[in-house]
Amino acid sequence: MRKWRAENPLKAKLSILKDRARRKRVPFDLDLSWFACFLEREKYDSTLHHIDRIRTWEGYTKGNLRVLPISENIAKGNRERHEQPF
Image (cartoon, rainbow, N blue to C red; front, top):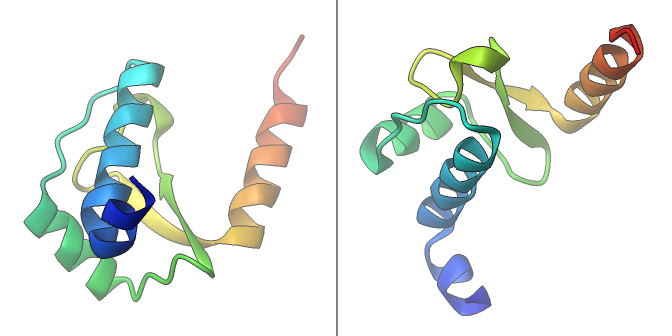
């Protein structure tokens, strides 16, 4: 599996997002060609960036994704966790 991921990084990343959408029970409508263009346009680098959903309830759909620096995405997640009432 590691070899396949190394040889197919786009397919592997898309597969991870699809699995995450299934587990979270949110929509997923991405395809490989759109995803490749999106990552290229956003200058995505997996060592520097995370793929983030703009509106979490809309899932992993075209027009609902953005690329964030890792530190910004982690800070955003921490803020959201602290804002939720218990």
